[in-house]
Length: 564
Image 1 (cartoon, rainbow, N blue to C red):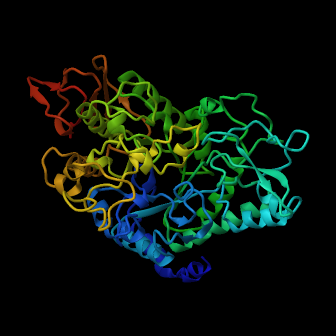
Image 2 (spheres, rainbow, N blue to C red; image 1 turned 180 degrees about the vertical axis):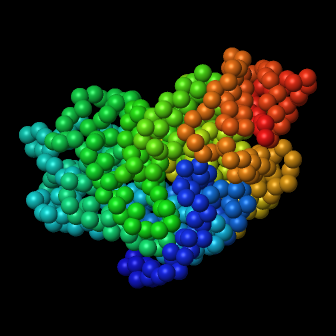
Image 3 (cartoon, one colour; image 1 turned 60 degrees about the vertical axis):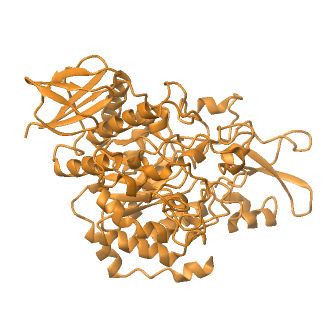
């Protein structure tokens, strides 16, 4: 890993110049479309069955032609991969399965040359148990300064055999693991809100803050355009680590402020980080993954002196239902307006069932399900939901493969599963593998163009018919719908920017709003509806019949009009 550190190119004026090439306009992030790449599942350059940085680099022209503004890379740091790279052993090194720092540098430079920005994941709540700090903490024993960088505590009970408090891991079971001390005796416990291989940092220790400020500068000097902050609502724990007093804690997540999540102290950290980011040219940004009880609390993360964007998980979890969608859209815009931050909209990511499958099933099943549902219905709704999302003011996120209309792979055999949550008896269902299956690029081949050596998760038969090759140039394909929608969004001044919509009268189950000369109508019902003809149709996910000043909008269809 130290060799990789020395291989990092020194910051030069070229880095800033490269960043400047993508600075087409100020505040680019306010209406950006950002594409999430899950590196192990995007493209494999060396035939080992695992996606890598060179594979991503080779496919950058595809992303440029798709029409996105930036690419967000899920973790590629050196890691034992206990949680797919979210257990980081070295924040300044690339894991050999993905390449080297030189590969990362080439990827960043090529992206800038194509007019794309690069956002990388940052994991500040916890490290890997193989991080040098944690290994030193174990070796040095109780009372050592190294242990203060994590949350080590003596256990309760007569012999310290019980955890220090009642907190539960997000992956199930206690959030504490007892260590064996250097002398071989049972000893202290350490906190891990996720897997035992992911010990939580103690952000009260000044060395932790110093280290992450250095890590930020390392990657900013490499030329990255921003950071997506994993578990941005974590890091700070309530003073004294008090018991929660509830043994179904996972049901409370997202509904309440927890003693280990969404504590007010996280905002002091982000104010310090923002000062660093603002030293760099090119309008670099922070994006928060912050699960909070309300969009109003999410807005705290994007105050003017903190982060730029925060994921809108309330929107992601909303059913394909007009009234529910309107409520969350209004609440989101109302919450973001006072702090001057853009809303964000997202339908899928690497942790939830793809929306083409979620919408294929009845509401109420959550965001991790293992039912295929009605594939045709799910795809139709997913296409309509995408057009609605892209019509809203703010920034939109696209998860790799959704532009192909990929469903979740719900029938993976248990023996091939990789999700660590699957192997822990409680907690999450552990079905995230279904949205992480490598995406298809070609109709044929050992992995449908993903690489020459198969894929780390098996792809379904028929995956090739959903591939980039199969859909490119095919009228009505989901890929061409995305390409057209993103081109229209870029050309229409009233799309993306702004912080409000003007709702228009519409039949029950239909959303209709105006933004300048632009009008969007989304029919969430299972039946055709008749609405006024609002001008020239720009795009729709199904055929719209217009006669006599009226338009017949099919079931589960979104239409964009312009009066200009």
